[in-house]
Image (cartoon, rainbow, N blue to C red; front, top):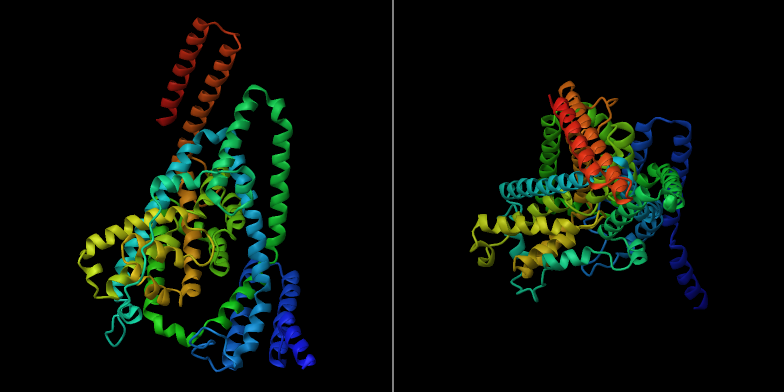
Length: 545
């Protein structure tokens, strides 16, 4: 008895209880080691990105085939079936690199966001920061609205809430339950208050992005204001921030090297934990979801073309972060890689990238909010005959859903598993909490599969927004090859005008400092102020023509 008890504890500790799990785990790590040596030998970026995906898929399918592609790995209560215990143990080991990678990048996310926005604010070109932020937020919100309309339309067209036998799935799952209590939605004033940082160090220690963005703006603006009057006071702090940025980038680049191992881990985990047979039961919903996401990709590509950006050239450089999002299922985890691709490969100005990309990890997600919200609304409309839903009429129901989705989109985290948040918020705010459990029972079955495409489109949209906003501000380097000839000339003109405006602002600031230090009297100040205004007015007029 003592031996049996000790063995039970030991097998739980090492998570290996049979020869099947031991063999499966050894094979998995052997493949990981071989993959690592393969990557060290071959430097091709394409092989680096896809080798882990292919290995994970093949190994996952083999495991599924060994157990005969079961309908479920758990019983009705959600407990692991005894014959599949070894798969659960394989999962606990195979998920190791996935968790190491995502936790490592998440660890660096807050310092990376803080430092990138601080650097953007303290740059000379940061006069445009307000316009960049406003344009970025507006574009991200428009993306959410467009994706919502696409997904809701496709979902209703596909009748995602109706089975092949004509049954309404939500009515079937909810089984007439009255669904319990409603949940009060946070008001807009409370939402704004919650975004404000309450404690400097607590905000840095948490994973809340918006308070960190606000703090980095405040710190950056304060440093810039002091440096204009007395640069020596903040010289040591500026050097510390520059050194911190270099250190964070070095660590990020080190973790990027294990991406193929993480991808293999993620794909294997997905393949051995999802019942392929069970997914066919919600194939219609999944099909509508991916058709919606595909149309969103077409919309974003069209936006690039309308802005006179060469879509084929842009995609040559933009597919890697999108692919990384596809396999990591986390916008936050791909943050460093996305920023690096935009700045180094597309030659988009760092100020624009450092402002919009961090924002996009927590708000305005085209897939995580827009497409998800639209799909949920279409599921509720087509999946139930309840008068609570249908008495509102389709247009009012969808318009209310759109408004609530846009509001919800300002606080969705860029991590896996956003369905629960969107479903809870929508059902509560629309007064139909009784359908929450039924909607979750369908959406959560395909959560991991949908999250693959949803995250990729989130990242794609953030990159498109950054590029188009940068173009509108003349902040794409002339060496880039993503712009058409017409767009290149236009953005050169915009850039020249903005440089003149920035120079004018700097001269006026310098003049004000002289006046404050009593180096000039009021008469001299007014005359020089007029001279600067008139001089730059003529230069800006010439630049516009």
